[in-house]
Image (tube, rainbow, N blue to C red; front, side, top):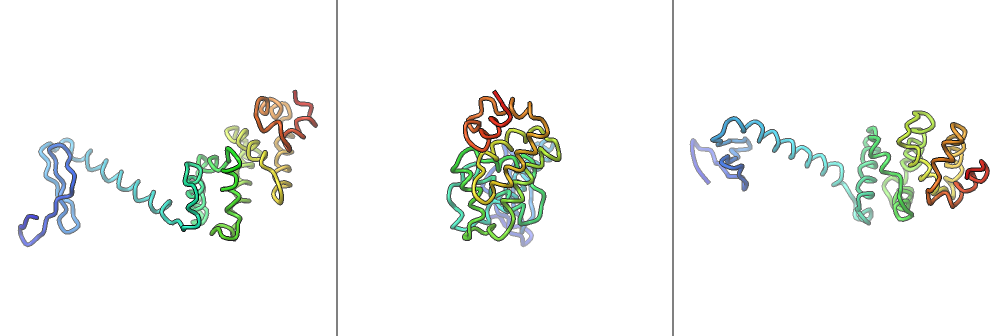
Length: 203
């Protein structure tokens, strides 16, 4: 610790080449030999700190009961849930990331309706699935076409009727496209996709 003019100066434990950063009562004091690179270096530091802060704000507010399996899917689900609770728009890439790849991921997604989940008293599951389907039926966003069919393949129980209604809308939009799109997809071998494949004489 150095002393000067009554101010305490503490060295932050990292250096940038021949550039050293100090903190003086909450203010940055920079000793830099190469002034041309100072702005760029500090800009990168502040940008990194900003991204880290946002990540902790969105991902850090987690209860123990929800800490099941924070794979990539689990992290994306948490981000979507936080944005939903904050009444913020869910970005399309995060929305698409909610489409499960398998039964275990779908269990995490549908698990947001379980009584012990903090999203259980909201419409998160039903509203986000609707947003996914309407990217196809309303927005005509082709990027969501196959993901929507994949999500529909999990149709079961209380939400099956709504899922199938959207499936029928998608087929009505373009029957030939539906048949071509499910060709080679594993879920085409199971209901409800198989039923509608047979009904529409898809090869």
